[in-house]
Image 1 (cartoon, rainbow, N blue to C red):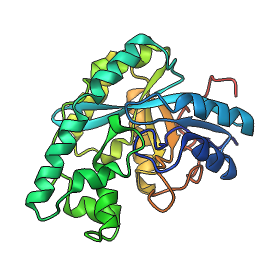
Image 2 (cartoon, rainbow, N blue to C red; image 1 turned 90 degrees about the vertical axis):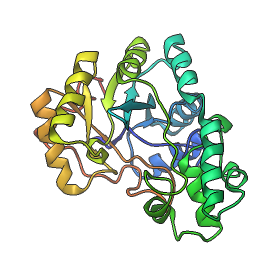
Image 3 (cartoon, helix red, strand yellow; image 1 turned 60 degrees about the vertical axis):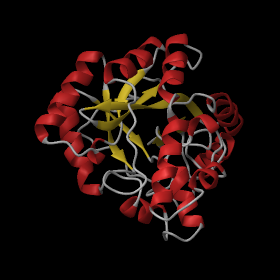
Length: 278
């Protein structure tokens, strides 16, 4: 059985390792088919592709697009994309816009909470200045001893109702799916179990996603608990969606699951890679 990991991050977005280092770690963990899916950024794909080829690992070009839907941030993964497609390139550039201003507002809130110089501290952890994020601030708060680890940060800061939280208006769901399809790719709803939606809201999201041309949903992911694997296998079947698998790896000792370490997809679902000739 192939070990397929179609969701992870490098330091081109909010991961800790360079794309080639992520590739090497994936190979060492037994991954056969691998996708780097950095947040709203395509810059790591050439290095990832080259490293995977040198390691004899099948590479899939990917991206994770931030979407605002019903006032919440939802992530849509695009797989088998052409990273040079103008619609996708320009759309992501627009989505990244405003991150620096948001980061400055986050730092101002943290200063009011007694944590000065957070912007300068977060920048030290940023591999790509266009993509400064909450994760970079979280790493700084851990570094200076405010919190024990990144999970502890998000329990006390940077989330809604806590110091340092600043919402951002991302892409629309329709735009994200359209950019992915324009680039020849397939659109997948990432880690659906993370979203705070009612059953009715989830129905609306998935119906709108399918209508826009989306085809898949993550079922087995590092962001799901084991009992959610079967829950979202049933959701995939209910909505006629293909199933994806991905660790959502960000770095050693900072991720819920190691690259390639998840269990296989449930037998009841059809994998997104069922017709990829791999």
